[in-house]
Structures are given as C-alpha cells and as structure tokens.
Image (cartoon, rainbow, N blue to C red; front, side, top):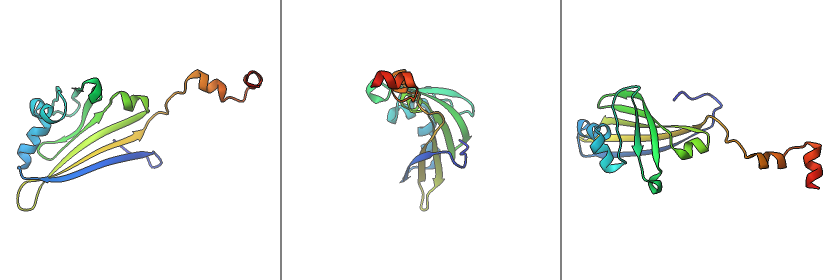
Length: 142
C-alpha cells in the first residue's frame, strides 16, 4: 500500500520469535488448511494478484475479502484486508507477514496490519439536513 505524505494511517505491529524454521512458518501462513487452523477458514492462494477470502462467522468479523499484493516465498506476504468494518469506516487495510531467520535458529515473525483512510463515511441525509446552513432547514429547526 503506497502511503501518501499527508494521508492519515495507523498500524498495529506484533513481533515474536518462533522456534520453527521460516519454511514451516511460511506453510502455516500460506496453506489454506493450516492458516484456517489458527485464523479463519479461507481459500488462500499464495500468488501475487490472487483474490481470496476468509470466512468468519458474524461474531468473528464475518467475511473478509483479500488480494495478495506482494509475495516473496519464505520471507514476506502482504495482502489487502476488506471487511464490513473497513468498508463502513472508509479504510483500506493490508496485513504484512515478514519472516526472518532468528539468531540461534527459528523465525522472527513481524506482523503489521496497516490502515489508511480512503473515503470518509457518508453521513445519513437526516444528519446532513440538520447540519446545513440553508435558510429553509434553519427555519424548520426553529
């Protein structure tokens, strides 16, 4: 996701060191059955440009539409993350998983979920009417 200089954005960053080799961690992030075992059922395809989805129950966030944006096997995968909340809030979000060999063996895993505003939510017409400065609206409010 290319960031514009004045574009509001936020990130959630989680880092940890896992005892397993990067190849094993990579499989857990890219094989649908393994990814589904710890995240959500999915139809992941680890190919740049591939579209896939996570199927969460309503209490688990519902359906999430994704597209693989960047991929470097055994090192990095980044995909868009579009659910009802991001659409409602006018956000574009992406999740990046970066794997690096850890000192002494294992894998250093860095997960970044980034969000940026792409569209302001549209206010309901009642809200817009109540907040306009048109004389007719102000007369009705008096």
